[in-house]
Length: 383
Picture 1: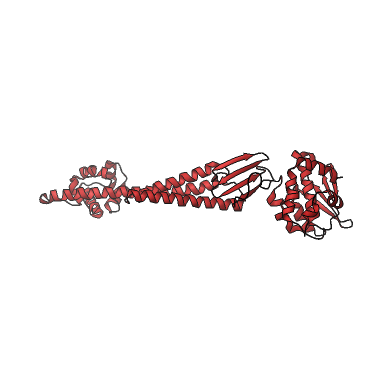
Picture 2: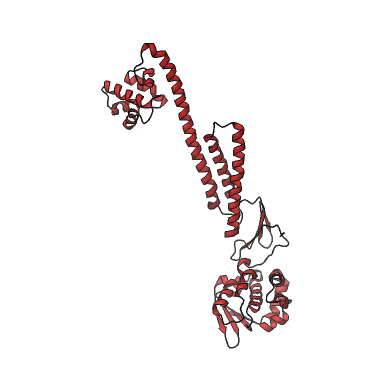
């Protein structure tokens, strides 16, 4: 089917009828720009318009599809040829539309999958649902584009595509969990436990979320399956910020290093409420003034836990501090190094050969969950 030849034939017969492009367009219910495109050979008229065009131009449908007047002796031959060409052209247009629609579905599906990973909160199941939905939409699009391929090949290819794409999203989710510290979107099991703990079981790893929706929220990503609910480290504080793996870098022999002391205090619990500090160089003491009233934040013995944890940490990390004075709005607490060394159980084990991280976690961090221990120890240590 010669589109350019058909276009010239339309233009020639329109002029014979003394019609402008606008007049013909009005009769056919299209725009004059459309007529111009037909006549320039840029587009073929829609199949539904072929008969109305031939009627308006006073030619046969066979003439129009041939792009010329068909002689009687060639009429049957041209008719058969035009029928075949029309069928081929129609199939071509259908395939082009399917291909275009398929590409749109592929793009939409991929965008849907990736945007679902960022739009929905990480702990919402809707993120994974829409991500999988996007994969399925893109598979439909692919099958429209490669419709000529055998069915069994398309089924196998679609299955492989689904697995690979899903694995890519799971890997991206895992990277986000490790770098941003968030709940996994592709968790197949979500369990709530007492003490504000959520466990997410994802493919190949487990995530524990502690103190969720508080200022002390933290995550532990267990890729080696080394923890259970009973053995995973639990603390009322933000472990990533206040744990020994972070605060040990502020270890120092002297309290006189203001920058080091400030960094340590800002890493320890209670710093979330703001603080200022002052060093007593003469008596080697440290005064910390928190910008909040102690009773206002003392839910579940939080102040007592924090002051014990902070004190043992500071005395362990800064060798020459002799006392610490904690001040809140309207109330203050004082603790001496000598009292901690004599009364705190296993203080010497915490400071075995410098600082023993495992013993720090065992004899300080874990004990922060023991209410009886906290009450008794606070009454003994603080004046």
